[in-house]
Amino acid sequence: MGHANIPVPGPEGQEQKHPEPQHPAPTPKPAPASGATSYTLVTEPDQGLTPIYNLLSSAKKSIDMTMYELSDTTVTTMLAKAAGSGVTVRVILDQNNEKANNTTAYNTLTTGKVAVHWANPTYKCTHQKTITVDGATSAIMTLNLTPEDYSTTRDFAVITNDAADVAAIEATFNADFTDTTITAPTGDNLVWSPTNSRSALLALINGAAKTLLISQEEFDDTGIESAVEAAIKRGVAVTLVQENLNGAYSSVLNTLKAAGAQIAIFSSKTGYYIHAKTVLADYGTTQAKLFVGSENFSTDSLNDNRELGLIFSDTACMAGVEAAITADFNKGTKF
Image (tube, rainbow, N blue to C red; front, side):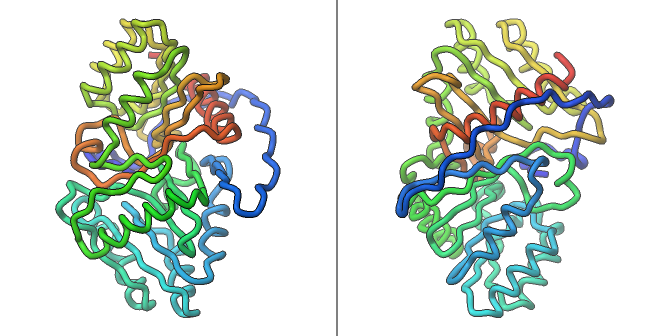
């Protein structure tokens, strides 16, 4: 799990399961014209890892991966196989928090002739989860590549070919791979920590006019808390789905509930776990925007970690996130 700041044991969830509400699937988008920018949402645990495996197996020239936690042997085998077939494969793995858990993957990949780099220790941790293939397509993910979490954990990935974003991701990867200082370029949509994540997320929340639908694993940043509270007070309907193991975020949740937020929590030691980090603003309106990424609403995540997300307005991706997080709200424990 991406517990960058607070150690949390395993995937979490609620004590009792409830049937999933039925939501109509988003209408599939037509295939984009050649050269058109596209976005594909991967919803976990619903879709499994096949879309990610397929992205990796599509590589013809290069794979660049930055990963907080990597223990999926299918992935390490695919990366080594790609390297053996002439694909240039480079991987950055977190060491500040997850070196012990990542060492097996590090050793396997090194033996498989993959170029592996322990992440820059300047960052409190490298919590980013991104895969770029052939310098042309990137998956920006909330999930780690840890199979023990796949079946019970709410997560998302967005796969895009936005040229400016992919180029910015690659430029930052090249710097991070050599521990070179960089102000990460933001391309068209990117939300980097520690570059612009705080300002971008505050702008998204402060710009909401009607609704905010939020899912978070961690929520302890007072600046984000104040922005969400201010949104409620100006008439924005806020719905929050929050992981809250051992009541870690009850103080924030009490403040937001008192202001008028609708909140559902997940908080047991086994079962379903909210690991997704999303913000959907003004869904169903022309100004709707969606954040998906590795950033939690925590001070470390925004100020001190290496993290990556994006804010964009793809109709099908927004519909998929809205359906999944609404389903989670309906089956969660109301706070």
